[in-house]
Amino acid sequence: MAPPRPAFLVVAWSGAVAFAASLIVFVYCYLVTFGRPVATDSILAPLLTNFLLFSLFALHHSVFARAGVKTLVHGVAPRALERSIYTWAASALFTAVCLTWQPIPGRLYELTGLAGLVAYAAQAVGLVLTIRASRALDVLDLAGVRAVQRAGQATDVPQPALNTHGLYGFVRHPLYFSWALFVFSTPSMTATRAAFAVISTGYLMLAIPLEERGLIDTFGRDYREYQQRVRSRMIPWLY
Image 1 (cartoon, rainbow, N blue to C red):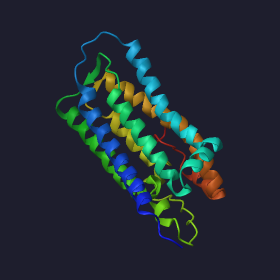
Image 2: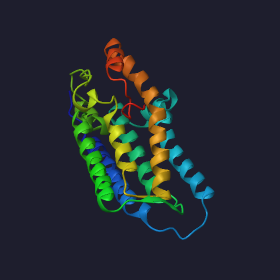
Image 3: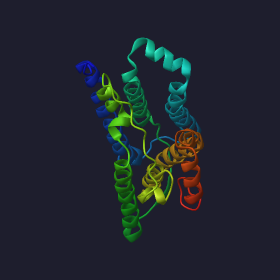
C-alpha cells in the first residue's frame, strides 16, 4: 500500500498545531482579556452575543455528525482527512469565540490573601488534571494525525480501550471536570469570565448524555457497568 501523501500529513499536523494554538488563545483570553475592566453598562446585549457565539461553536459538532455533511466532506476530501477537517473547523471556531467574546460589566467577587492563593492553586490543579487525563487519550488520533498515518496501510483501525482507572475512576469525564475546575476557580470572577464559565460548562453538561450514547454503542455492557460504578459524570456528587 502507498504511504500517505506529504500534503495530507501537512494538513493533519497543522490541524493539530491549530488545535493547540486555540487552547493557548483560550488560556490567554481567560486569564488576561476576560479580567480587564469594562467601560460599558450594557449587559443583556453582550450576554446574548456570547451565548450565540458559543452556540455556533457547539453547533459544528452536530453539523459534522450528520451523514449528509460527511458525504459532502468525502466528496471534496479523502476520508483520511475527515478528522483533520473537523479539527481545523473546531480550532478556528473556538479561537474566534475567544477573540470576539464580548465584555460584560461587573465583578462577582475578588479573592485576596489565602483565599486567592487557594483559588490559584485550584486553577493549577485543573491544568494538571487536564494533562493527566489527556494522557489516557491519543491526542494525535483525536486531531486526525493517526488517520492520515494509517492511510495506505493494510492494518485495521485498533479498537479503543475503555479506560476506567485513575481519574476515570473519579468521574466519567475528567477532562470536563478539569475544565470546570479551571474556569470556576479564578480568584477574580468578572462578569465576562462568569458568562464564559457558565455557558461553556453548561454546553458540556448537555453534551455528555449524547456523547455517552456513542460510548455505549462502542463498548456496550462494559460502559453500562462503568456508569454504575462511577456515578458522577462531570462534577463529583453533583452531576
